[in-house]
Image (cartoon, rainbow, N blue to C red; front, side, top):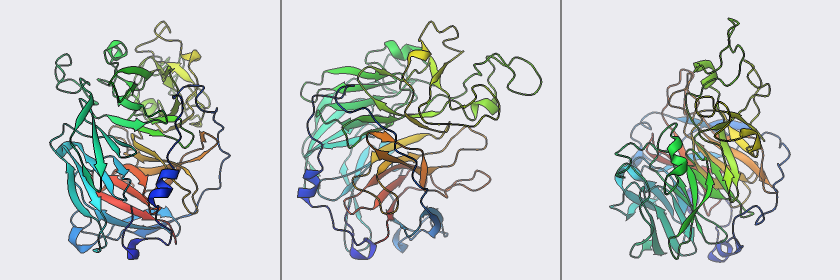
Length: 455
């Protein structure tokens, strides 16, 4: 999103022609045959980082920015607060250089438009919606995922036309059959290279096996024909795939909030008393299990929930084992699938990449162009845990991308939590704007940050 020169790095702005050239080509569909098999990138050298003070214009310096705040970012980068939308969630750059931010709690989409003041003008693009969350563009068409439906708008010059509902009847807290018991009502949406819509439907609860037989299927990713509204279940066992994005090669990826309070799945002693801890729910095990998947989806993919859990332990079931988050297999969930009759966990393809348990990944996007000193990759808003002790720290995570695969997690932005677990901010999403900078939404500090690479 282009901003005034004093807040803008010395890189050319993306023209309409360039944006058009970056549009993904049409493919037959997203499937195992639609994109090449991924190759995990070689481990890059970690980029150097530095602590920088966040720049905040005096007009928007209310708490938590009524005192100096610093974050850690790549060396040479600068950070500023450019807007203060309340409860800012997912973001998307527009074809004309603006930035849209969803605000589910207020039922609206905020539009950020550059001006000469040094930070954007904030205004309402659409209001009166039911928990709007995910957004996606297909050319001049804007799709918005409300909690109960998917809407389509024509977008031009910062304005939208009338609403057309593409798909309705999606589950949320007002669904009669759920009787208000629905924990993951927020939906995300992505447009595939086949121009179909891909919609995340979260699980009803932490563990709710009935989701796998509901209509539409919950804990899934739906593939929706935008012309007819007809849908199929594209992937299942996806507990809460809030992160949903299409990679440069056209493959669909999801970042998943995985389950809580998982029981220990091995007949051995996890502690030191020599007893069999099989089936016990122990904080010391729950703290790091199961991992949060970052998975490359194909038609029919099953991520196992709630019957199978991806395991980060290099030595399965051994306390103090080293962790590995790449190409990880599954173990049975002993509370739902003790004898393996519900699902054969050994038959599931390994999870390509992942984050530590209770990271709470939310927004997922891919960089449009290489970030100076960092490279090309996936950006993940890590919200941080609510129930882990000590809490998992919020951050903006970066995963190098090459040849259809993702490398190991690196940290692009951190510093929101102190050593005692106290927080002043929680990133939700990070996207690269047309000016090459990264824009980060924060629903705890009620802010949008601009991370500017060195000129």
